[in-house]
Length: 298
Image 1 (cartoon, rainbow, N blue to C red):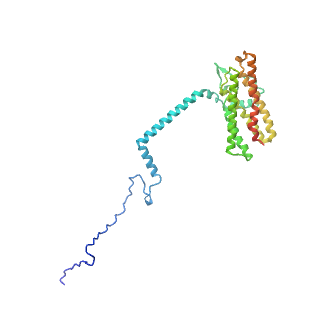
Image 2: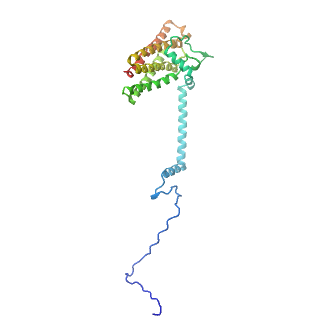
Image 3: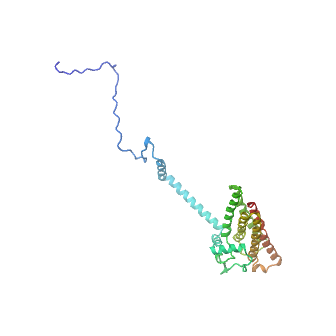
């Protein structure tokens, strides 16, 4: 009545019960925390590639990883030096460069000589101060550029021929390439053995014999290409022509190289053996060409 406010206390709840007031939720942050190296993505996931970047940075900052990488680099460098050393031990890079010292004019003339060698007169290799001239300066000098390119062309042409005949497969093409390569290696080894047994004193090296043996790929390409264009009859005509031209080329080239002035003064039986070796190497070429190409033309 007099304006005194009366405060009523709630005594309906059981005594001894504890009540905690719930705290109000924190307001959302105005800025995202990017100190961990991750960009904010919906759902709390890190940005794509952030874990990779973190792993790379962690790896680069790890001293153990740096030591391992440096040790691996030193091992790789040491292994590379060993490979180069062994390569120079068995293969002379300077000698190998000599067989690839060609130009366009030489390649064109050499291909013409391989196809039609009958009008060529001088077959001796030219020298300058007791050093043979490179192939680009001497048409009679052997090279490895034409055999290498001819081998690659033969493999591609074999793949095309097999594809035309619906017989192409990587296994068959690999077999053709490996067979052609193995035949050349076996031929070179046989020639080296023959020259050793015949005690031939000449400047012929393994690279020379590899070059002369690899010239057969030119005739193989012409035979297969003619067979694809004109059938089996054209193939046999081209085979006969290229084989005879290659035989004549090898006899004149190898006879000049293997039966040089130093060999002419030797005993007659030795000269005869050297001549038989040259003729045998030349006569074997048509058989190899036929064996490596007859299955590509039908």
